Amino acid sequence: MMRPGLCSVTLRRLDADEVARRAEEAGLQVIEWGADVHVRPGDDWAAERAFEAMARHGLTCDSYGSYFRATPMETGKFGEIAATAVRLGASRIRVWAGKAGSGDVDSYEREQIVAGLREAADVANEHGLEVALEFHGGTLTDTAESTVRLLEEVGRDNLGTYWQPPQDLPDEQALAGLELVLDQVRAVHVFSWWPSNERHPLTFRTELWTRAFGLLAKAGRPLDALLEFVPDNDPDLIPGEADSLRKLIEAGA
Image 1 (cartoon, one colour):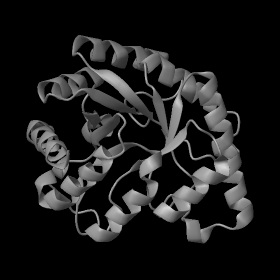
Image 2 (cartoon, helix red, strand yellow):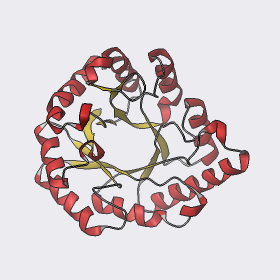
Image 3 (cartoon, one colour):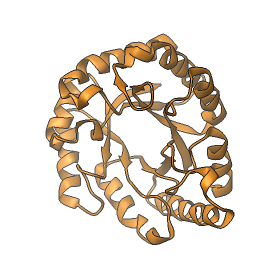
């Protein structure tokens, strides 16, 4: 029920084929291609190259990691993102909920982001795709409570959310947030940062991730667990981190 995978942003310095090769060698199953380096929106050549790399290495694309933030400036631009996701064979597009935290926007700004997300979800639906929110500080998904409220405001069945441990939040509070959004979680970005953005191997936060995967197992539906960051962005750490990821998934099952 839980597919281990890799975010291509983990290996920004490598080309698409090398990313796919290393994912295969590490025993991973899916890739989230990032729109920042590997496959920019509208770059059909890059999308085809990434798709061919996955085919060579027995992988599938679970998600297209866009940097769409649902602002008024982006109105009408989601169609190109959706078309690129289709070329990658993705089932989902990751998006961001604005550019400021939930406590820093007024009701008008929030309504604009809701409208942008609603438009994105509708365009994605026309392409047979889901959309999921990046669960991240500095956006309207900076807390689980704000995320739940946002999903209700947008009101689209094909919109869900990702989850990852919020920076500097103790395990109990992070897991309480996961429980709150659990019914809407589509995938998780997996890494071990503590404190703040100090990067460690996954096993540094074994208890957090074992309990998180235990909660996710209760969701009773297929989900993706995607390695997002490793210490020093070192490609040679991917096999060991992938092995840790599988063991943590099994421990939580």
